[in-house]
Amino acid sequence: MFIFYFIIYFCFFILFFIVFYFIYFLLFFFIYLFIFNLFLAAWFIISLCVNFTSQMTDLLFTEKDLVTSLKDYIKAEESKLEQIKKWAERLDVLSVTATQDPEGFLGHPVNAFKLMKRLNTEWGELESLVLTDMSDGFISNLTIQRQHFPNDDDQTGAAKALMRLQDTYQLDTKDISTGELPGETSSLTVDDCYDLGRVAYSEADYYHTELWMAQALQQLDQGEEAAAVDAVTLLDYLSYSIYQQGELERALAHTKRLLSLDPDHQRANGNLKYFEYQLSKQKKAEGEKTQDGGRERRSTSKGRPADYLPERKKYEQLCRGEGIKMTPLRASRLFCRYYDNNRHPMFVIGPVKEEDEWDRPRIVRYHSIVSDKEIEKVKELAKPRLRRATVHDPQTGKLTTAHYRVSKSAWLAAYEHPVVDKINQRIQDITGLDVSTAEELQVANYGVGGQYEPHFDFGRKDEPDAFKELGTGNRIATWLLYMSDVASGGATVFTDVGAAVWPKKGTAVFWYNLHANGEGDYRTRHAACPVLVGNKWVSNKWIHERGQEFRRRCSLEEAA
Image (tube, rainbow, N blue to C red; front, side, top):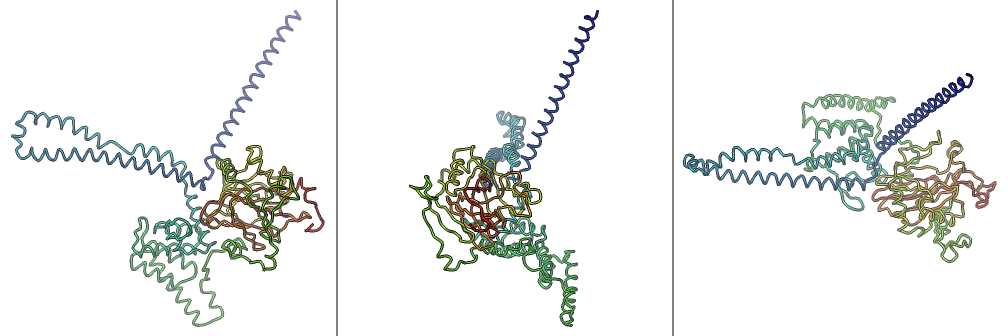
């Protein structure tokens, strides 16, 4: 009896065990499936949210494909209309003949048959032809391609980039509009200028609003046609933007011109009275010459809006090539040489060409460092991964996008391709520093307007966790490889010392970010100037402190 109960209990135990683990397995499976689907959904959403603003080449070919599709649609419509036209011409001749003697015409049995056939069959076929929608193919292609189109934010970003170039390189609005820039000529229409002005207006940037609305109005006055804007609208924006900059007399003059075109313009009539009242107060206060008379006057804020970057003026001067010039004595100490890194085996027979770009801090350029074939391979590897470039957030220590860095970037590891590994090894052989603790090779692409405003590569004392997650110490040195020539703009400038290094394909620039005692070298604050014309490709290698203990000896002094 005991054995019988034992067997029953044992069977129940086994059954319970199987059911329990089966339920556990199902639960685990459904949780895994949920997490996997959640991950896929998140990945899909993130992929959709990635801003492909700078994939300009792909967009060009997309537009080319759409133009081809549009032409095919036009040909189909023309063919359809040609058929209808021939049918109409044939019937026109026939009807003229038939209506001259209707009874005689219909007295012929063939004519009577053909009339019945036309009305019963052929007019129905014509109706089907007329109702045939020839746009299906084009609309289908457009719908597919539209998902890759830029959005409003992208268009706004492009407009801001154009205004950034205007300020940095002190370009005249008319020159930009007429396309008088290096390279191919491409002009702006009245509507284009108006759209630029509206972007500035939406940002409360009345300086650029005035510039672009005035340019649009000038082109309109010269007889150019506009599709989406008229003089009244332009004068409305123009008078308000000028008023916001404190110029009441000019604002009043534009308002009067607006009312001469549209006397019933409600806002302009209100502005006219207000401007006249403010102007009379201003003149009265000036006439009395009282001490506090200026308080009644609207503060003038003519010019570009206030800037968060204290060194903006110097930065832009350097970008234009108007930087601090070295004294002849200092310049005479800069040399070009063949460099073998203390008779390194790789460079004994074929040393590299080294050129001094600056002395304090020491910035050197190495010529013919990579071949065109290697550059193309690196770009090929990077292009599918290019995303909006990020910077280290000093508060969180994490990577994040920033308005002051406008570029695309991708990271390439040495194991991904022999070319990347060779470039890393070449950097180590030339600099003498260990790159095994360096960050992966970062490839960056700066399109038109692309820039990186003044910054430090190393982590400062007020951001101790900048590179904590890497566990390799601070960035001791920077290797910057230029992978393209730039038609205009795109220099690397050092705002603290006034140095400017211009891009040259196949060359690399190197400098130390830290002094020999481990303190940051604040003279290395640098920036990537906006690209005016062309396309700038670079790759960065940030070398860290760990592994350099016997390669670059420490010192208690800044300079060892």
